[in-house]
Image (tube, rainbow, N blue to C red):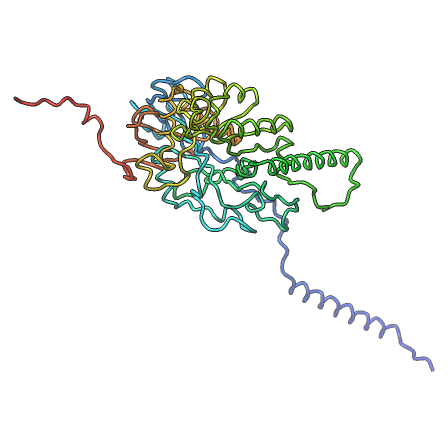
Length: 466
């Protein structure tokens, strides 16, 4: 039997259901959080305007040794944000600039040491450790080096190759390096007490110990390393021409440091003292077309005319000479005139100290603090003052590929500047102030790690009453 529903009852039911639906939607709407109208994207002050330049430092009245250009007398150097703005005579000092009075002082670029040993580095730099984690800006030796004018060092780390310097997800696969593995180096600024701006560059050289090339067997092995690297480069070029057809992650068949060397991305740095050792390294470099920097070259003065055409650069220690062989004194051994012979032959050379560390030998000029003294010995041996100063500054900068940042006083370069109380190659000269990245990190009067006195007192004439 069908149930009959009259029209009035049906209308009543529909109205009740509509009322319940409206009430429920009202409650749900009240429970929901209110939506904010869309806001325009917010911009930070850095996005709306460029960072304002920092204050200007003006070093006024000094004799400026630019190294790469002429000497500027009674000149001014303007520094801002760690860089050199201008250097010249009659420069207007901007209003509000910090002025450093350098009248009567000598201004030179900071010196560069290429043979430092773990200066500014502590802890372990090998394995999976980042080299930045091993930096020690509170190394007291940094202040001692600033006291003699050294603002940048190439410091050994005790790690081998780039894999010991940088953390990677997996070790970089390479062929066995054996005796031809590179020793780790790191270029650091002497920002004593401040880690910012301290790190400059990793592994500027492919540095291999000299013993790796001594003897017939080692020379044969080195030649084989070079041949493997040549084959690897050729295979890479062929694979590039044919497309990405090779297996990814395949183990390279050559020492990657040697590959970089042959591709011109690295320079080989090693020792060579005797004529035979020097000539062996020249033959290798010419045969395979790579660049070399030879340390020591004690007997290089005898064949200086061969070094220039071969494109050899040298790192020398003028105060350290090799004893000649008995009965062959005229054609063997070293001489303090080495720098002079290299200069005349057009061979670029940098100067090393006799030791890469700071020790009690510093008072005698035999440790790293004696670096400027080595340049003075080069001048004593007949080298020009211009080349001797360049050997402490722009030449080592070029060797490391950092000539655009350090090594001379030029606009746009890092403001690594020394304020000296005398000629840079005078043994009586002291560093009054040392700026690194435009900031004073050493002040002789405040640091008091070297004698502080008024030199003019000793220049006065003393009258003795009779």
